[in-house]
Length: 443
Image (cartoon, rainbow, N blue to C red):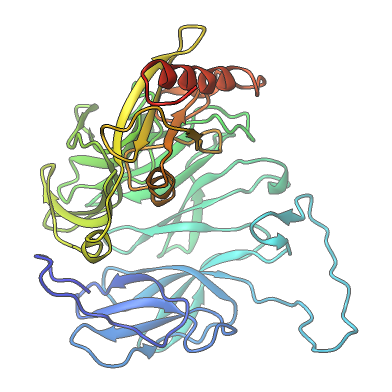
């Protein structure tokens, strides 16, 4: 925990395992978090800690796996997303029950084999320790959020015949009083990240640009649903950049989001009424993890080419660094000279990138082309330890945002669709030729 001026830091946990998702209780007296307690084998539960200090206490003892949670505004209940308990055979013998797989998508690179458990929504009542079931069945309900008055919950689900065979997701609205759900989007593509506006008139969410599915070249656009008129409109139609998580201003006039734009990530403001956009920051670096308090104060992480992520605080786009976690780490280091560049590919495409040199005067160096994967991603002006180390060893290191990268608009990203190994390779070769011509690289 850190004071808002950054002068005081307090470590809150030590022996707990797998700590994550810290959150203030609505009355700001407690800090809640997910943790596995003192053993990695136990499932994650919600723990509660008094902000004044003391040992954390375990609040929940839930069967299944809590993947996410949110406080109700009155502080008396917590909305939980819980994955069904595992029924796998955990016997410590050589004879195991067969692992039966009936899903179309049966394996995931990051998870391994997939079972048929689902994630559903529940309400945990703190005083009674009672758990109420809100949703059940054969579909997942995730990314849930709660309206200011605690009466409605928005969540994301895929209710098609076989969700494994498409990437469809829609937004649903659950009414606490009637205990019923209503589907408010019917788009065949992806909808996600629902967020209620202060006061509860609007619901913002993201939507993919096409309904085709399994399309890595998509952009996420920001949409606004009027809960009174039941109409929706796109706020980012003319932006030509992907929009991620939306953060409402306390007065409900603006939505703030972090946008990738040619090696940078800055904060963009959407005016809900005027339907206009405006960047509130223009830094050569990368913002992330933006949060906005009830007083309008913004907290975000920011990194640039010579500084790892630090915590920044600001209002109206003016940010001040309030943490100095990396000072001790950086003090003895001689960092690389980092600068952006652009050049023309053989077919006149403009390629941009970032060059790391041992120092500003270094010339005629061996070259390392350290390029990003994806391909829909971008190298940006954030701290990169790997490239710093390579450069310190006497190399020129180039990060190249070849065609297929994000941050340059949909056309740039989609230009290599169905044509891998052609245009992006030309761009990388063009960068090599450019750096040789400029004298940075020894041919």
